[in-house]
Image (cartoon, rainbow, N blue to C red; front, side):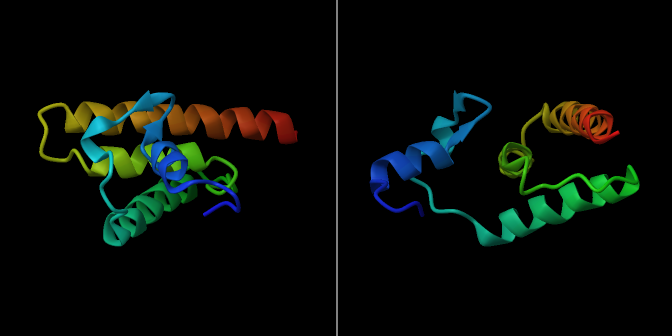
Length: 100
C-alpha cells in the first residue's frame, strides 16, 4: 500500500478498472489465487505474442484480467476474454512500435 494513502482511497483504487468502479468487488479482499491466475494468463498471452511487454508497466491489464476472472460465471465471460486479448495485443503492438 502507498505511504500516506488511506484505507478507503486504497480500496477505491483497487476496485477501479479502466475508470469504472466495479461495485461487485467493493470492500472485498484481494483473492491471491485469482491474482496469481490473472498474472499467469497475462504472462502466457504475452509470451505467445512473442513480446517482452511488461505487465508491471501496464498494471491496468492485470487488474482487468483479475476482474474478468472474478466474473467467469457470467454469460458474457467469453466475450470479455476475447475483448481483453484484443486489447492486450493492441497494447503490445503499440509498445513494440514505440521501442522500434
